[in-house]
Image (tube, rainbow, N blue to C red; front, top):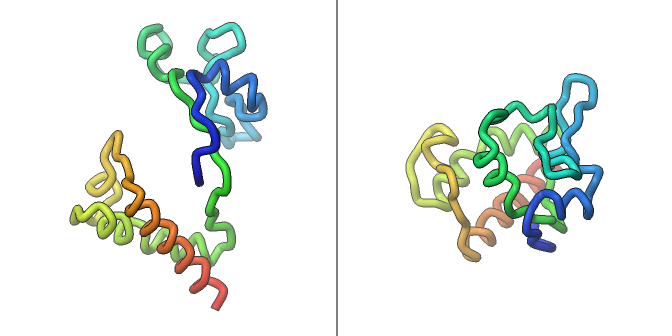
Amino acid sequence: MQIDQKLDDQLEALRHRPENALHFDGNQRAGNIIALPDGTQHPLDEHDKRDREKFESRIKNYILGKDPVILETPREVEIGRDRSVGILSKIFDIPGYRMQQVVGRGRKLSNVQVDQLLRALDDIKREARS
């Protein structure tokens, strides 16, 4: 996905995209905005309930995306699951057999790496169609 807009916090995000507020569809968690309109923590968010400072840190910055590349069909998902670690290992030039070994917290992609990842996703979609 491309960055459409960078917002200061989840309160601003909630005003832009109320449909992204944390909720559950049956047992499936949906939505990723954990702040309520009054700035308090959503009761369904189970992280650090007693630590206001951590919560305030977690709600800073929010990115609205556009033009996502989505692996949608069962075949696309199957190929993506099979190859994701290898693709990212090659892009980051970090050997590993598990995602945690290759992609650490706060990992950022350069423009060249973004292009490599988009090409890899396009290749997966193309292969799934053939």
